[in-house]
Structure formats: C-alpha cells, structure tokens
Figure 1 (cartoon, helix red, strand yellow):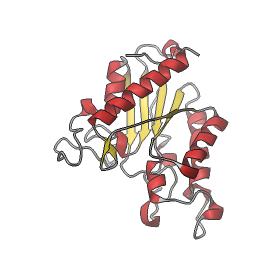
Figure 2 (cartoon, rainbow, N blue to C red):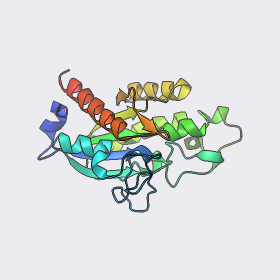
Figure 3 (cartoon, helix red, strand yellow):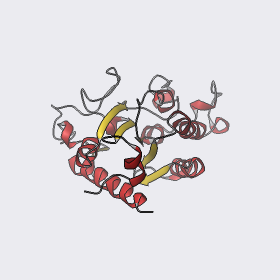
Figure 4 (spheres, one colour):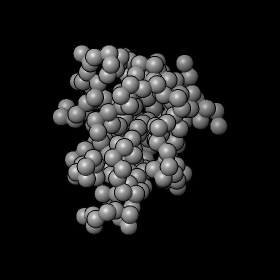
Length: 223
C-alpha cells in the first residue's frame, strides 16, 4: 500500500506519529483518549448496527498499521461537533473539536475527520444566521471551522495536517470546509462512495477510507 508523504517521512525520526481529531467515525471502545470520550463502535455491536467489531477493522488502525506508522493519540468523541453547539441546540463545548484540538500529543501527521455532526445537527453557519444570540462566534460553524484550522497550524507547526471530508456532507457546510482549508493551507481529502450502516462506515467503508487516505497522501508526496 502507498506510503505516507515523503516530506512527513523525512521529517520524522522513526515511525511517523499519527494523531486523530475525530467524532464517532474514528472511535472504538478502549481506543480513544481521554478515556471519558464517548464512542460509537463496540466489540459486541449487533450486525444491523455495524460489522466493525474489532479495532483492526477501523479506518485509522488499517491506515496506521499498513503504512508502518505509530498512533500518537486518537482524540475522538462520538457526536462531537466542530463548533460549540450541538444537537437540539445543546452546548457541546465539552466535546467540540475546537476545544479538543490542544490535546493531540506530538504528532508528525494530524488527521481531522469531522463536521458530520455539525451537518446533521444543522448548526448555524454564522452568528448572523443563528436563530438566537450566541455567547460568541465559536457556537457557529464557519468561525469555528476557521479557528480550528488556525489552531492546528499554530499548535503543531511541524505537523502535516489533513482534513477528511465525509462524502455525505454537501451544501454550505461543504463549501465552508473547502474554503477554510484552502485559505489556511490545510490539505483536504474529499472522500467518495463510503459504505455505511446507520450513517456510519461499515467494514467495507472503513477499508475504503484507509485506502483513499493512503492514495491521497502518496499523490501529495509526488507533487
């Protein structure tokens, strides 16, 4: 399988250290940090929910293992939004991407897989489009997405960062993500045709994510 980007490999002493900032798509019981983060995937899940019932079927484990890398930290939390607002208008600041971005260890490569819950929850794009006044702009999507990209650059200046864009996200949320990634110099992998059960990648989908990510990084290494 394709290796990581040449620049990342050259900069790292030993195996490339990979950190993940994610939501339910990147969880598995006992495999996320901090330990209190909620997860979606469990070893005893019924078949109608998923067939991803072991760590080695997750996209991130496949990717790290088959590329000879090392997992630095998987800071993923089921249901997490990028901004501080979540489902039913609840305050999600305790699990938001922008508040967990500081806890990724010392990675060479950061994989950010999010915005699915912002999209599903229908959070406001900006303070101006919010139905009610928000405490600050970080409770809306576009400012929070831009802040997240800024923080990734500021906190981890030596790390390569890739934002992984779910294939189901469309409309203004997708446009915002593509725009902020371009503006902040963050590579964006636009995933395609990911098989899912109950809205979450199944084993086939997990394999496809890992393979598309490896191909994306290999292509960037050849640029």
